[in-house]
Length: 58
Image (cartoon, rainbow, N blue to C red; front, side):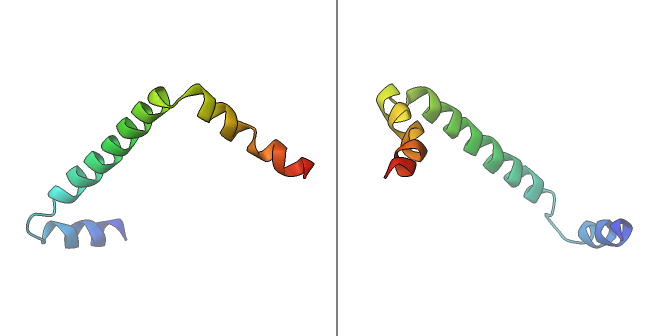
């Protein structure tokens, strides 16, 4: 089955750009997420981490 898909994909012009685009999207997403984690305030992280505990007490 993989040979069929590989053979079919090789006939499409410009198909090599799709893996590059998906890698860039993946990389940019995790860089932005990494930056957000380090710039998030400690108060916000503390508040969000206690949400599941607060819901059980109500």
